[in-house]
Amino acid sequence: MDDYANKFQKLQWKTDVAGRISVANIIWQFLIGFNLTMASMIYATALATLQAAIDIAKQYEARFMMT
Image 1 (spheres, rainbow, N blue to C red):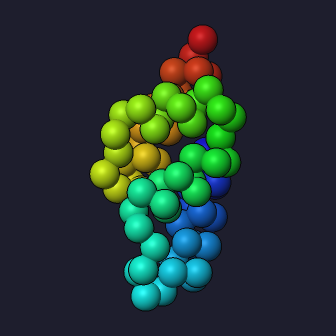
Image 2: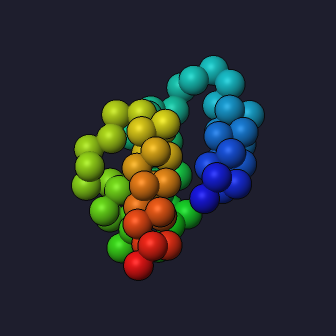
Image 3: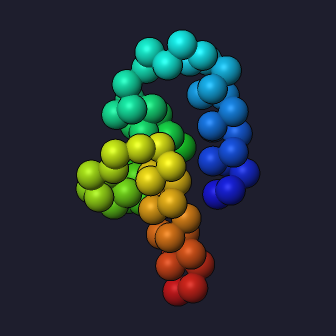
């Protein structure tokens, strides 16, 4: 998950240097990399930033790894 998040952030920074892509679109693009169930659970938390989405995704990943 950390590797995916780091690569996504680097790619997002390179492709949106001017910062014109909306935060909602960036978060949605990030969530596309997950399976549908996990993406839906993360999206349902009403995220405000990409970092918040990454943090929530890490929490869910840790919970799934423990079970």
